[in-house]
Length: 314
Ligand SMILES: [Fe+2]
Ligand SMILES: [Fe+2]
Figure 1 (cartoon, helix red, strand yellow):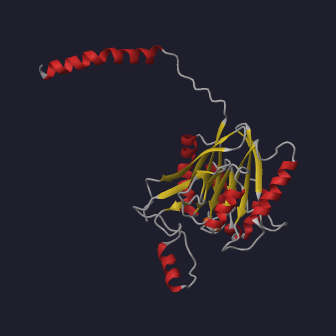
Figure 2 (cartoon, helix red, strand yellow):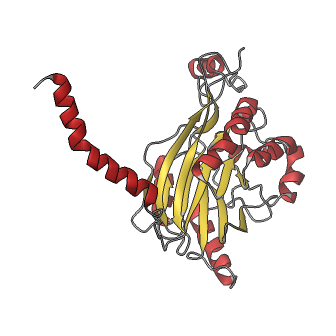
Figure 3 (cartoon, protein in one colour):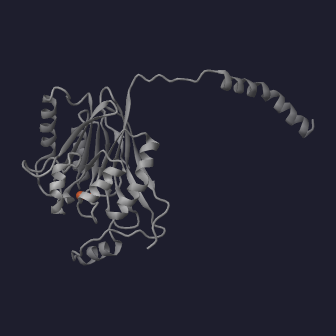
């Protein structure tokens, strides 16, 4: 049998199958998968570092929200204003980029002129376990995409300022929210926790403490994304750190040479946000998690790392 004859024979044998597949494709009704579970998606983004972080967030976040069909977005903005705290303008840029809530951490106090704006904007959070009477808000609740969302910002105490206990603070918040009859926790609300902490041990401990009580516990503050994302046994999605949003070529988003000088000499040179350089792209990092809207339990969690392909020249 010649090669051509062999090919003709193969086409002859396959044709009926191809025709059947084509007919099925054209004539069959579309397949509809019935999923009785209402799945909601949340995106949490790590600390935004200065102008480069704001620029890459504005550039990439709207597309990421569309791509992942995110119903709710939390962005940590504690380093948005030149690496230290926020201003009214930087908060607006993060909200305009697509954040539903802006969380923070230990650096949120750096710009004192921002405090009144922080107090006035309920979508701007500072850690909830600062002592009673501290300016600002530690948690936020709203309705979106047909469900209730609760965002709680907490801060660790190991290797950090020894403020109130984050574990007890969550207990108290949960109790007060449960007393509000219209929105008990957990269950009907999807509860997102930004735990701003240095110690990985403290972060994992809080993750397990909140397992089955919060929908997602995401660590922030170290600026280095960890690879330990998973759904804990009782249904809480967890990651030790979301990473940071800004220049990838610096040291935790700060200028490399200044960080080297500080580390080698132990002189506390004032750190500056790293500037974008060719070959050192800017990145948005965080997670996307899915939840059962009926129970608030997590279904999945995935790391997110989006790179801007067009870094600014120096
Ligand atoms: Fe930070
Ligand atoms: Fe921090």
